[in-house]
Length: 200
Image (cartoon, rainbow, N blue to C red; front, side, top):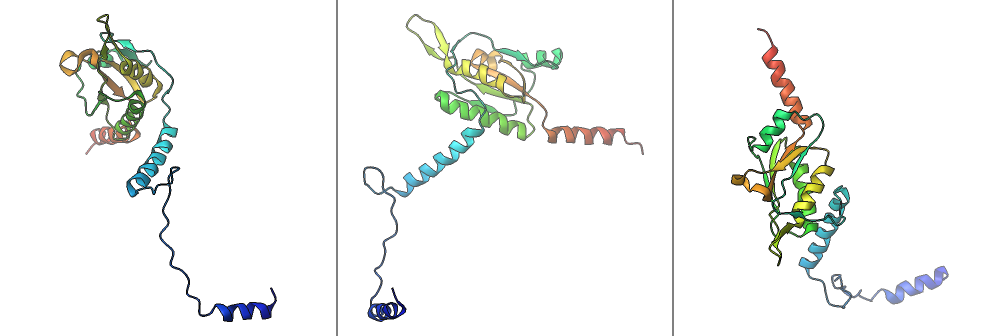
């Protein structure tokens, strides 16, 4: 288009008013407008996907465990006396996670987030309630979540030990978890120790 043609075009269009544009509306594959709630839900799902990507817990199928099976795990270096106190329920649980009625996929996210958060806050002892599972026709009970919790807790480096709870805390339907000291907790312990050693 030459400069003259462009000037002519501008003159012809000078009295034209641009059309008003409607706000953009996202359409679903069915062609219906997507509500604000649905859009927010999709955005949250994207955030959850990013969180899931950080989740190191296995998402493979894990065999269920018998309802009455006692969970017990201790990493090398954990003192026997400390583990004995954990087994006896002598450490107060500073936080608890109840997995009842959760799907395995949801429980995987919750366990990862709960342990990560508990460690970040400097908690040392927590309780995870996984339940005893569903009754089978042959009167046996098996818990899918119990099997998963037993597997997942071993995969987390901050978990130092765990053991099925005492009856008053859920018995074999729950587990005490001992976490490694966080850097913040170690720093506080060092400061406390150094204050105690200071001479006037």
